[in-house]
Structures are given as C-alpha cells and as structure tokens.
Length: 228
Ligand SMILES: [Zn+2]
Image (cartoon, rainbow, N blue to C red; front, side):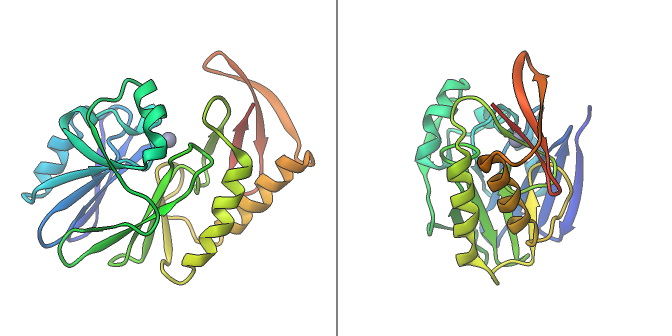
C-alpha cells in the first residue's frame, strides 16, 4: 500500500504508512523524522522531498513497524532502554541515548522527551511546543495496543501514564503512531482505567490468534489491548 503524506502546518507533516504513522518536524536549522514506519525503507528520501534542512531521526521505540527505514541513518535518537529490543529486531546503527527531560533543538523549535515505558522498556514520547502536541508512539492511542510477548509490562505502562500528569497543560492534542489522529488528552485517564481493569482481572478478555501467538484481547472503551 502506498504511503500518504499529510501536511499539518508549514513545517510539520504526518506520513501514513499502512496503519503506521510517521512524523516530520522542521525547525529553523534542522528537521526531525519521528520513526521510519513499517513499509517505508525510503522514509529518509520522503522526508528530504519535504524539507532541505539537515535531517535527523528519533524512534519512539523499536518495534518492527517503526524502524523500517532506519538504515538510512548512521545514528538516531532512542531511549537506551530500547537497545535490546532494537538489536533483536536486527536494528543497525548508533543509538544517541535520550530520556525524560532531554531536549532536541531544531532551531526555534525545542522538543522535549518524555519516558513512557511499558509498551516497550524504552518507549518515549515527544512534546512539540509549536503544535502543543504530545507525539506518543504506541502507548497512547485508540487502536490496538500490543502488550503481549517479550519486553511488555502493563504495570509499568500504568505508571507511565499516571506520571504523564506532570506534563498536563503542555499539550492540547496527542499524535499517536496508530489509530485516530489526533486524539484528546482525555484518553490518558481512560487508558489508565482500562489497563487497571485488566490488571485487576475485572476486564473481559477473549482468546485470539495473532501471528501464530495465542493472545488475550481486551476490547475496552478507549482501545483494544492485546495481552499474553
Ligand atoms: Zn507500533
């Protein structure tokens, strides 16, 4: 399926790649690609058609549907806690470690990193003050949230979403990698309630098969959680 590029403002784009979303943010001096999608080995070229600025890459996390075009970059921003997941997916290149409180200055546009471990150990989000958006990766969205298999931790997930309240008032929209675009910040408390009901055993799950794995699917009001 071909990708589709959607302009958000004069220097912000989202690239829709068969169910996965990639972002490109430009400042005065450089541009940042956020993830490289599932079927976008040419993600860097797509970005360079949109901006002439020097291009850098940040990965929200290292699941395979977010790194397909990483090989165009010698180095990229990623949480150090994501390295094992990235290397086990065959990921190459040098990780420039970033974690909560770190900033990336694109020139007149200073992005801030937020740690959101749980979906994966090194899942991170990015606050863009220009668009007042939280670019959330996979943990905060209204589609399917993968929480089965290695590297997932639903308790940590709930803790991350609760800790996000420290950033209340810093963003008006959430821009996830999957599902609807955008989603309201009010989804965060709904996801916490849903995940807590799964942990408490009070959510109703049904067994399903996904890529040969037997998983338990919890259809909750904000999103579908796919768990062990
Ligand atoms: Zn994903």
